[in-house]
View 1 (cartoon, rainbow, N blue to C red):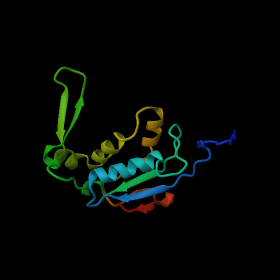
View 2 (cartoon, rainbow, N blue to C red):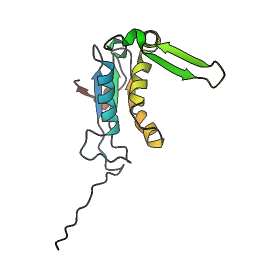
View 3 (cartoon, rainbow, N blue to C red):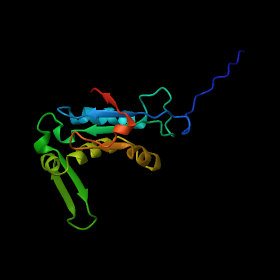
View 4 (cartoon, rainbow, N blue to C red):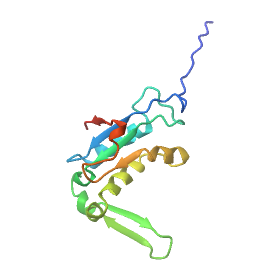
Length: 147
C-alpha cells in the first residue's frame, strides 16, 4: 500500500494579496454586474479561495444610475422592507428606487449574494458604489474590468 501525503492549501488572512477592480456599470445588466462583483468580493476567482477566510478583492462600481434591466423589471420588480409594526410593510418599485437611490439597487443585489455573518460583513465593506463617473479610489490603482 502506497501512501502519499496530500496537503490541502488553506489561505491565511496575512498571506492574501489584495487588488482593486473598477466596474463601469453604464448600459450593463444589473444581475451580470452583481454576480461578477460578488465573485470578486468573495475571492472565488482566485485559486487560493478558502471559504472561511476573506480572500476577496475590493470592487469599485461607477455609473450605477445607468444600469439596465431586462424585461419589465423596471415596472414590476419590488423591494420590500418591514418596520416590525402592524402595517409597517413598505414596498418600493425598482423604477422609484433607481430615481431615489441608484447605488442602493446594486448594493442590495450584491449583498444578497454574499453570505451573512461576520465574514460576510467584512466582505461587504470592500464594495464601493458611486452614481456618477467620479470616485475617490484612484490611489488604489483600480484595474478596469469588462463585463
